[in-house]
Image (cartoon, rainbow, N blue to C red; front, side):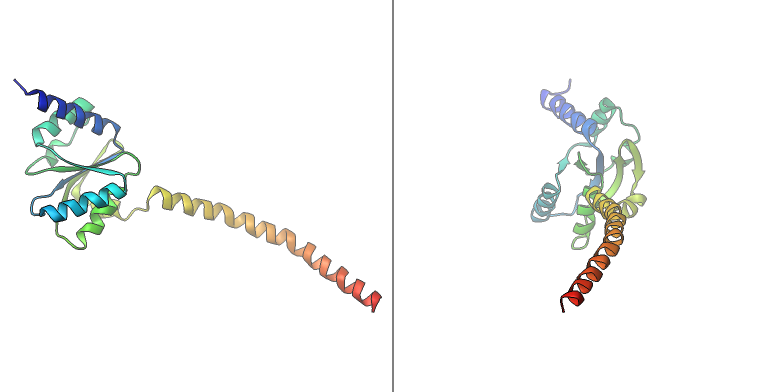
Length: 172
């Protein structure tokens, strides 16, 4: 008979997995308390939840949330980095954290319902964030408009310059 605590934990995990745009399964073993606290702080700054749970509870929650393919990632100690906004935020935090530490190692990922193994982590971690892509798009859309504006304004400013010169010649 499962305990009420475990039932509540499975329900909580299931809700998180159901709402998540990205879930990164990591191995955190080998990190001390100070390192995990620093990692959690970096996750919080990017609006990412970092949760440690038992593999059996994660399996039950994934099944309840309708996710498949996560059983391969659930061996040994497992932590989940869950993002509800930008799927690349956890990857960026982990990538930056790995510059100073050798953990956490990524076991696998689920991005918008699609399962990826650990081999895809570097490719995903190097993707630009949604905000970066939107700013590039705005820049690309703004560039032709500013060029059109300057092109259309150039003959007018040239005409104004010529009229001012003509006016100064008539006065002088």
